[in-house]
Length: 102
Image (cartoon, rainbow, N blue to C red):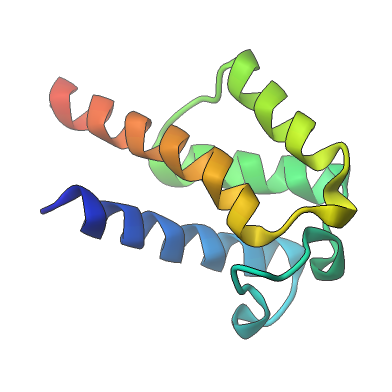
């Protein structure tokens, strides 16, 4: 499986988790959608991070959580694509680390 297909799967999974956590239709999770219009707040963002940890069997480090918090500190102006830009690389690294351990 190529890195690109892993990235696409992670983005698809992430978007599904985001839709479920924020309780919005999946078709509203587009690259240019503003996080605020999806109903994101600190609580459901925490729930999203928790869902990601459970789905991928990972634990976010403090610096990774800080990156997400920094991104969301001004979340009204942030897009789903910017959110992906922070989280997908972290998830990819975690997936590759899990593969190497297996």
